[in-house]
Image 1 (tube, helix red, strand yellow):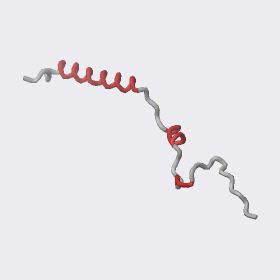
Image 2: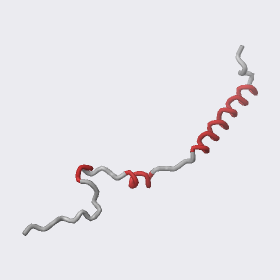
Image 3: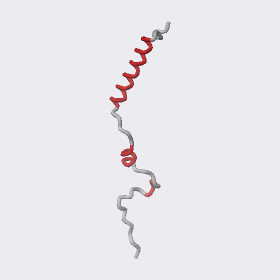
Image 4: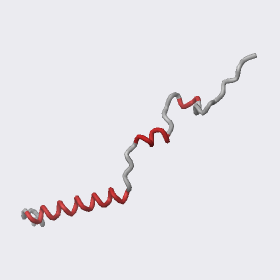
Length: 60
């Protein structure tokens, strides 16, 4: 008789060696969306303030 191969949690055979989503997600850097928006606002305000201080804004 032939022996049955146990799946053993190896995933689908059609994945052809691709990583599972949760495995790739562990390695990613996680940043809260609110943090990204806050950094964008701060950088934008800093640019406007620096432009106003050096006489480059508003350009007429």
